[in-house]
Length: 307
Image 1: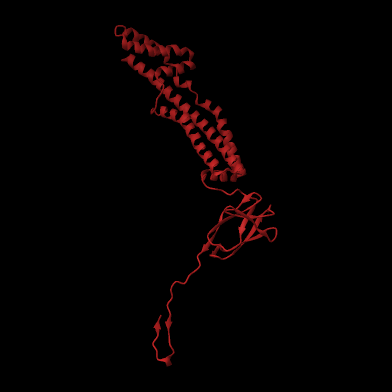
Image 2: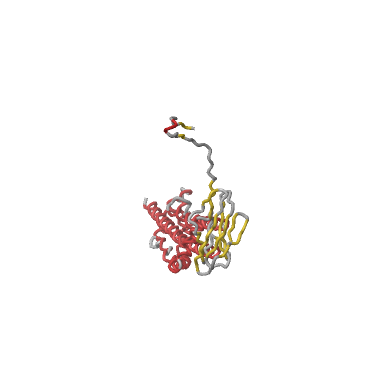
C-alpha cells in the first residue's frame, strides 16, 4: 500500500507540473495574441485612414483581421487553455518526465526509469516485489524535488514588449489624434458602405427643398466652406458631368431644366466629392372629376341642383 501511495504522490507532482506547464503556455499565448492583435490593428487602421480604401479592399481587410486573430487564438491560446482545464489532449507522464528532466539533469533518468519500472512491475508478477522496492527507493530520492518549480511564470515578462509596443502606439494615437482610430475603425466595421473622402472644404446646398413639379426647372445654389476652396465645381448626374456657374469664390449655381424624373447628383471639386443628393420630381396634378352646384337667383324661382 505504501508503495502505491508513494507512486500516486509522484504522479500527483507530475500532474501538477503538467497543469502549470499548460498555464504557462496559456499566458505566453495571450501575450503573443495581444502582440498580433494590436500590431494588425495599428497597421490596418493607419493604412485605411491614409489610404481611404475602396469597399472591396476594406472588406478584405476586415475579414483578414478577423481570420488572422481567429487563427492566433486557435493556435496560441485555445489548445493550452483546454489542456489546462483538462478538456483536451495533455502530455503523457513520460512526456512530462522528459520536460522535467531537461530542467533537472540529475532527475531525468531516475524519473523516467521509475515510470518504466512501474509498467514493468505490472507485467512481471514474479519480480514485482523487487521492482516495487526499487521504485520506492527512486521515489524517495525524487521527493525533495519540486517538479512545478521547473516552470517560471515570471519569464513571460520578457515577451511583454512585443504586446506593449503596439499597444503603446495605439494609446499615443488615441490621445494625440483619436479620429485616426475612430474614423478608420468605423469605416472598417461598416466596410460595405461608401464613405466620402474627407475634404478640406464642405459642400453646402442652400436650397430649402429639392422637390419640383414634373417639367419644371430648379436652380441649385451651392456654397463652399473651408480653408482651401476649389476654383471650379462640377455636378455629376449619372454619366454626365456639368460645370457650375461661379458667382464668387465660394458661391456657385446650376440650372436643372425640364425635370421629368427623380434625379440623383453629387458635387466634385479638386478631386473631392460630396454626398449624393436627390431631386424629387412630383407628378403634375390632373383634374379627373369635379362637381358643380347651381344656385339660381330667387327671382328665377328655380331650385338649386348639382351637375
